[in-house]
Image (tube, rainbow, N blue to C red; front, side, top):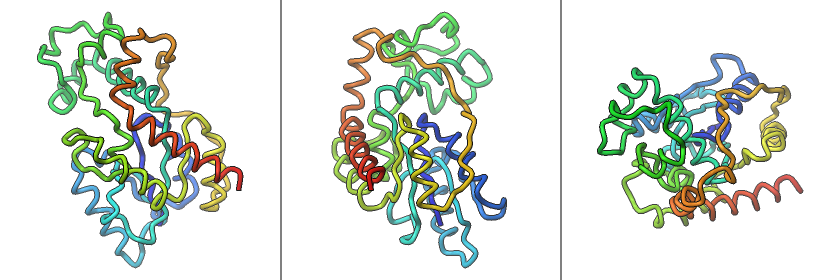
Length: 246
């Protein structure tokens, strides 16, 4: 069984479309956004692995909780340059927040500011202003938290999790891809898992600002919030290059 650990804003919807196309419908399971009910998603994953007719592919927004993922599962994930990933997530929320129905539905989990969201004109708000005001709850070092298997994504000091995330990346993840090298990442997965149809169209892509378009203070904030992810990403780059060169 292949387990796709989908880290937000790493090109996961495109990866998923390619992966699902390799199998019949009854051979895949989409766990969806397992972050909404972390334990339920992990328990379901563990039970799927115990079935004699276990699916060939399970995919979702889940954390790499080693005890809940079957020992023989083949784990695939993709990381992204941490500051750009964070920019993409903030930009996604800002873009969607102008829809009153969306913000009302998700405000209880996403809204961080003490200001009422109904008082803000999101259409005139810049990304720099959004980040400076801390409007949305975007966990720091999200990639580290996910690969360390932390169930509460913003309830602990992530500095304690970097070592575990690195060990999981080295010892538990079979294929690690990089968003910045998307085609090569798919080729690695295809070679490892026997995928043959790797053609794709990008899905759920928004035009986020480039890093050099941000205010320097905004970039400094995001670099500070993701300094552990920067270390983790450096390891991912090394592992990726070793795999490409082998």
